[in-house]
Figure 1 (cartoon, rainbow, N blue to C red):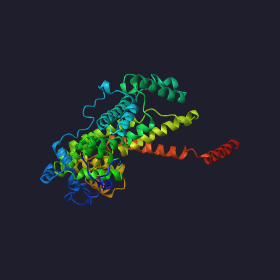
Figure 2: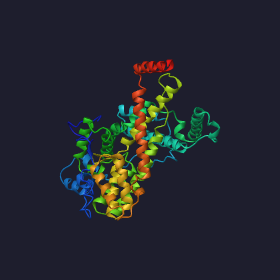
Figure 3: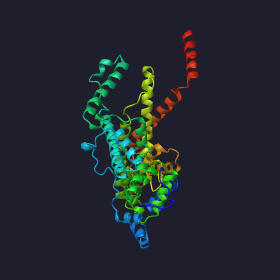
Figure 4: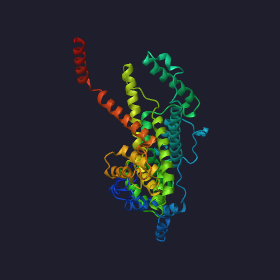
Length: 458
């Protein structure tokens, strides 16, 4: 039995609040544009020096292990590779038939087992429910992405009837989605309730998993589950105490990992590591892969936001459509923050801009100005007031002829422009919906009617 007197367990965030990091603190290339050549540049930020614990070695803990340690700590040292994500054998296309069930049923059964203190069963069904949730999200994204470009066969027939054309395209897309979902096992189950989906969006299952792992003597996975929960709930005091206890055990830091991590996060960290080692070619290669992977995951996230909606009230046709789309927009807007990585307790602020920040300087160090300049322009999309980057742009323009640059080189990269436009327009539309379509807007309605009637009289 692991644990000790006075150890707090149950619901619960890490010993310190999640901090933010700005890539522009230590800017690269901030010289005056009239200088004949740039001074030695500074890196955007030395992540690896700032976060040494993220890359600590097991040797530090094995030295501590020479002292008497509790049984659970020895167990944790004996299982250096046990903290594998529950998605290791997950497959969207070949999900195990014996695990197919409704998400509500699996999650509810896991919670029942937790209440009954049946820890192996809790772990089994909580892990199954996490895989079922991922299957549902992946299935939604798959169908919505594949049907996103479906349109009427001949839209010209509807030139004089824009409303019919618009809803004709909606119906064609609905037909495509219906066919797609009929062939996927995730949609043969009862769809989960809104409350269940919100629990998984907030990583609530990991709150229960960390304790069930602990009670099952699986300390490595308990550490990972606690950390995974804390990334969404950094101020949860109970889980902070749990994590502080875990960190006191030899070998614990080897298992502080996000079980919901995305591949672009690992690529980003690897690129920064290469950057800090002055290996700019590798840094560029990995950062370009991280960018591409991030945009792919982002597209999947916003596509998965277009799932089922629980109808709670009766409204007219257009207000009902607007309500549904507002809910979809809220989820799409949240994708940007949900996909922002937390590295060693630090939120990588302005993540997409930060990737272009690293790229522009790495390309500069490789004397590849044709690729460096569009990265500067891309960064400025997201932070147009950044004085450092504006000075960089002035410098590049000053040496435009020397380096054979054209006006096209000073444009943002297409994928950056698309992402910026999409996130900006989504946010603007959501703000409009919240401001103009709220329930308590009777005063605005009366004012509008007065204006309308006055116009009619004229």
